[in-house]
Length: 280
Image 1 (cartoon, rainbow, N blue to C red):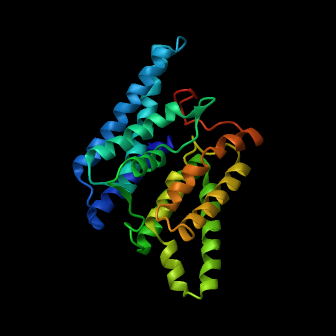
Image 2 (tube, rainbow, N blue to C red):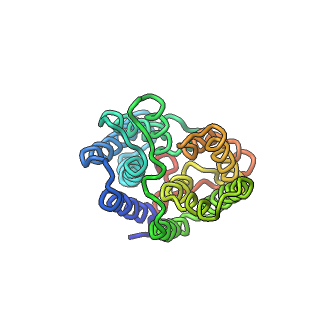
Image 3 (cartoon, one colour):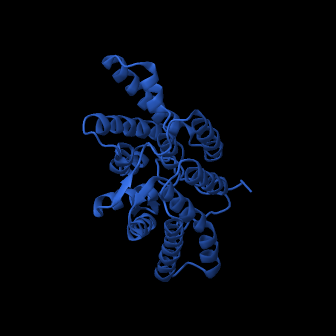
C-alpha cells in the first residue's frame, strides 16, 4: 500500500483532518472540504486534458497512467488546504483549490513546478480575498500532537528521502528562537510552547518537503531550508506576520530553479510513474 509514499501521505493527512475536526472543534464545514477536494480533482483533470490536446506525442495509455498517478497529488493538495486554510466563503476555498492545482501546470520551468501547490493556493486566497485566514495556533501545543506529527511525518520523509530539509529548517528556526528567548530573558516554557505548534510541524514535515517542487540536490535543499527558516524568523518578529512560514516559502520558492542550475541532480520521480511531464 505504501510503496507510493503518496498513499501514506493521503492516509495521514486525512487522519490529521479528522483529528482536527473532532478534537480541536474546528469550524471548517463538511461542504467546504467536499468542495475543495472536488475542485482540486476537477482542475487536475482539466489541466491534464489540455496538456494532452497540446501534445502530439502523448499516447492515450500514457494519459490514463498520468491521470491515475496525478489524482493522488491533487488529493494531497486539497487536504493541505483543508488543514491550514480557513475562509467564510466556499467560493474562496474553491479559488484556492483552482489556483493551487493550476500553478503546477502554468508556473514551471523545464517541466518542473517550483511553487508548492497548497502554499500557492493559500497565498492566493490571502492576497485576493478578504475572508481568508490561516490560524497557526489551531492545533494547540499538546505533546501528543507533536509526537504524532513527528512519527507519521518521519515515515513519509524516510520514503522520499527529504528528511534533511525538515531537520535543517526546524533546527535553524529553533536555534534562532532560542537566541531570541535568551536575549529577552524569557523562560524555557515559553520557548517549548512556541516550538510545539502542530501547524509548524505540519508545514515542516508535509509542505516544505514536497519532493516535486523543492531543490533536487541535498546540498541545495539544506541551504534552501536555512533561508526559509531565517526569512520566517524575520517576517514573524520584525514584520509581525502570523503567516510568516507560508510567505517565506512562497517568496523563496523560485530559488529552487537557481539551486538546480548550480547543483545538478536527478529530478525526483514518484515510484512506478516514469513520466516527468505528467507526474504532478
